[in-house]
Length: 332
Image (cartoon, rainbow, N blue to C red):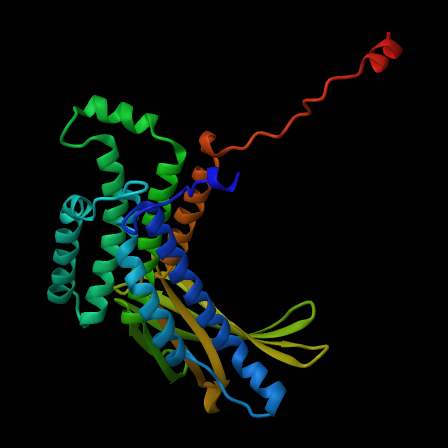
């Protein structure tokens, strides 16, 4: 019988199966690097008593270099055929996405103030992911080969897994764009302010209006109010931040004030009080930070769309045993 067994499931390295293997390899290695960086200080302290800290430099040198080539390859995967793919043909289909991504890199360098080369390349990578996901959908709809009506019918007939892949990869690009914007263009201000002092941030003026003490059910708040003024000097909002002291345990905490501008956020946090009513204030402006969560929602929607695909549903097994004659006679 062993002679009748044949190997099955073989595939060429350049294929969709090969892309999935590459994806799993990079993700597993990246996960292992994060796990090692997190647990190594704890294991070292428990075994030797020595204390070390593993911070951002380690993760930037391990996680980042692993993820960049994976993100570059993401757009190729859905366009590759099963078993054996045509890498050159897929590259031709992605030429438009590649050209637009390069144009975005150049535009960021030329028109965005204080943009670095890494920020521009990150924006281009995000565009590459989003445009690549749309390219897969356009190719499957038959763009350039069929009329709009036929394309619409083809799109309507595509399985849910196709839309799930597109949404997940598009959301990944949105998340990458948010991460790049925050890490490259975030601003932080730490200063001492007294009532009436102002700070210019993100095209607005932040005015410190003083501190008010409030009694809560189990805490005491020293709440600071900040007026947010637009370029015309008109107040558009009030941001409140507080130093909170829980009376039972005498445990102080900081309650940050957050203002969301659709895609960006402004954070105001209080430090230690100074003399003459002054207060140490920390102000962060994080551009496009909400894109990180919007991209995550896209990825979640992609997963749900894939799960809704009828082709991937597995029916519950049913019993094939028939009732015996004795049981049938007893029932009669």
